[in-house]
Length: 483
Image (cartoon, rainbow, N blue to C red):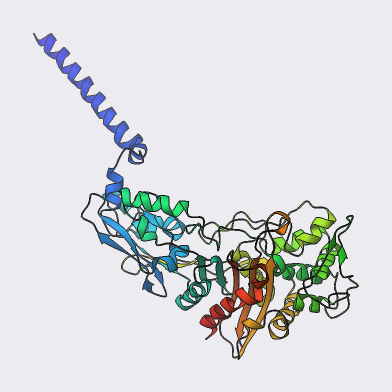
């Protein structure tokens, strides 16, 4: 009898060991995979069982949470949702997170280990901390001025502080209310389908995720290349440029919209926006020089984060001379986001030193203890300081005496450059209206650099110009900052 009892005890011991081994496998080695299994709703339920942390604009919350009483208890709410959607993005229980809601999700949801009172606290206690706060660099008055200026028309505005890279406004139009996507159920699914079906693409962030031919605003990059390489030594000297200009190795003549471009100087070509002069200078600088100059401003960088990802602005690295000519006036395959063109203006305003743009000022715990602080840092040396000073003078002349007079602000030094970018097959599409600019109060203080693009498909071709449509919007944004 004792023999059978011993066998039974041994069998029970083996079963106990197997059970402990299996428990260890499940709880230790498979814990992460089971936690992250889409079929496991426990993690999702815990995630939405507390209010989400808030996103701040100038210490004012532009987000919130509401208690629904459902299994996924707290849903995201937004204050002035369409105004700040290009900054916040959405936090949807159905469709996930985007923009700051996505890049700062660990802070906002309370899962970031830095929110815990002690190291390894979350792992030991299995607790979730209250959602933290994310403070943005956005200036409310500038954001509102840009949003109202676009007035629902397709387009975008980006404004940055040249001396730091802080993004002061980031607007995409038309916009949408991200709160429509916050919860679950048929209503949310219907809104998602509706928004995605609209031709106006309201969920597309045109300021950082859409690229456009920059048109004549790119002439600032070409001018910087011409001065830095010594192709032009005197901006006020004639350039020996015919009007029209025959594109190299072709029978195609490039005309001007402006008058007085024959043999115009670089300064005059910038002031009245001569295609011929800038195309010829691009060819003389050469492909290698133009690529170097454009990349100095941030073109061809696919890794820019603010922290949301920014679409790569393009300047081709393999072109024939006629293609270089067209690319040098912002046509052919040259494409840029509005943020990229704001960076061009910022580099000029900041004496050639381009700072890395950023959208998140700091993150903190619910109680206000600092978790992280973004430091301003130099991104590229876009041009020589002497070149930047010459371009400052030329861009001021555009506003005072040229195509950008609609951007002038009394008592403020303003430089600008208009652009009308053609696109479509044989340039059949309605041109985009561009304006890039910078403003500096004459009594000191922080300046601002702005880029505006308007895709106005409802306007007639003759009514579209950077100076007419885009410059007044840039002026309103600049005034909101410098005043």
